[in-house]
Image (spheres, rainbow, N blue to C red):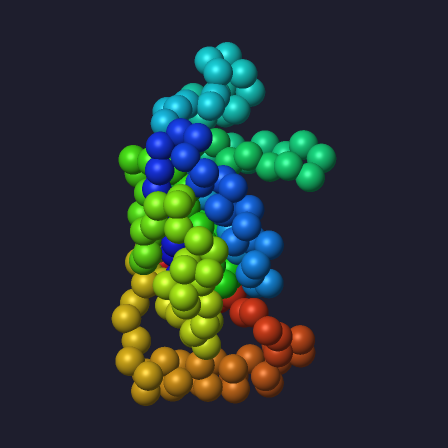
Length: 165
């Protein structure tokens, strides 16, 4: 589920997100949509990497990381690969989501609007989610789990399978 929080600067978006994070005991990823187009400075390392041909650069310092050169769609795809229960997108113009709210909503109202129920299986092809009816979803889930259970260390709570053509 993606929750978009849309509002102007200093309208309370970040405060609402902080309250939601305190109220939700689940895995949540927040994407901040900014009006600034660029964070790289010309001549700096990450700018030079991208100029030389890197698709993106990940900068890590201590416990903080920043991903350079990513569209909103790519950020959402990357967030989904981390298997969150909820993705929150904060911003003004580029906010997307299954549910879009304003920052003046109460935490209780927002919690009623969103679903934190995780699906047993989701399949993405080139970043787009494939719609699965209940029968097909259950078939994929049971078949993949059964095949993996025959492998050493093949059982787990979260399983990523990447197929590259």
